Picture 1 (cartoon, one colour):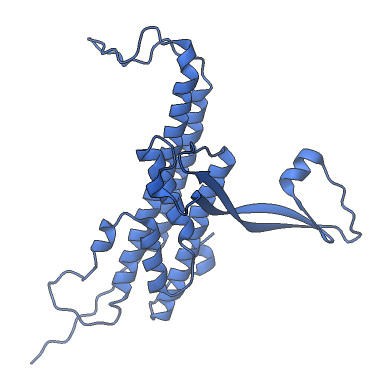
Picture 2 (tube, helix red, strand yellow; picture 1 turned 120 degrees about the vertical axis):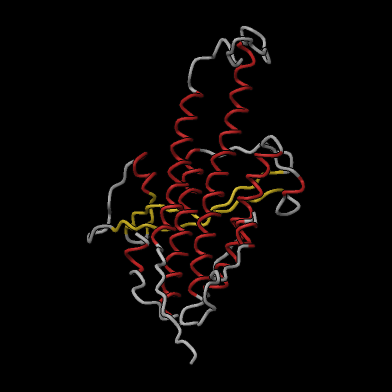
Length: 277
């Protein structure tokens, strides 16, 4: 007589995807702050690595007039490494989401005994975060513009492979490379007036409405155009906004993933609000 299928229960830990996302953002912010602090140090007398036999790649002592240019190159390298961290960890985050989608697709199915769970591993081998995000979004079933992530990848490639200058091959249009992201901003709503909290901190503000004013969090579309050949420079605030953009996008994906799991009849799927706060 044919044997009855054995029911197997698998634990899909959606919360672990959040850990990978948060780890990349924490590493980026910490390394950037540490790296920027070193820029403010007094010029060093030597940039050669010390060993029993010192290999002199720089003159001794290091010329003071070359220090500003060296620091500028380091600043560019640091920015590239920070963007690489964000991109790399977001890519691994998407790999984990893809694994959950692959496993969930077999919910209720009968599979051969003693065989590995069929999972498409080719997804992990891809390097484009924008294309990975596109496929994850399509599979879950919601709409999201992945264009900003393509521009961020192109920017990172310019910093990594072209000494921080925008290369023609990495342009987004004929004008150059248009970097795009979404950033949170805090607004004071006073009647018909909308005032940024940053402006209030700098200039002060007197509320005019008799009923008082509201403080709201709003996400704005941001863009910055770099011409072909231009040196890429981002402020600390812009990097912070980009890190937040990665995080908010990741939280959106996790929320939609949980809704998708519930639609498949996955038992004990976590609460969306709790998983994305």
